[in-house]
Length: 279
Image 1: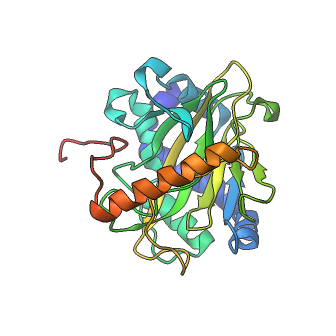
Image 2: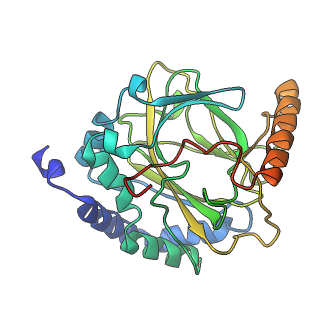
């Protein structure tokens, strides 16, 4: 794996751009066909498979990550990237390279697109058996509440992840009363999804004794994707069969939203941020 060890974030960025260019016509059509609801595209075989497998092998163990566990979600996250192998940080920030941002901006026809060096709600995530993410809308803004969150980039790196394993991204383009669309978290697949006030999405429970690993980024903009979008905190709901949980989550979202109206930047600082020396 010496070739992978010699790669830096610029090298990763060039590999990503080269792969997207190969598939750009299909990507553009896929995003165009979906953007009036929840715009998305995916691309398989993003990196040479041996590189992606190496990335997965460098993931921290769960005891070195932070578990977020509640009725809303159950998963492990890691965002303080200087605590982990450098290759993970290099890959994450490769997605923030201006060449990568530009080609995605052009394909999605988003005039103003900006990466996030703070990795607010991004970084690494891992889900093991029975872990899940309930239907939700992402927080509408960045950590300073100055820019709109507009794209979510999810790169899945677990080798041999079967569709029957669960742990897949689900989008709800017709709302939570209708059937969801499943976007499988297959090895070496990048999914890019628009985030706005209608972008309800979830992650299905993992049903096997294994971990599904993901590298994630968000892109922001000075302009919201949806003309109807307003500031909102991360807003969770129950699945269609979770009637009681849904009521609890509605109350939870109402209370958290009203707290944010009183305290613009929150009562406490969100810990899901990459703290660098300048911070």
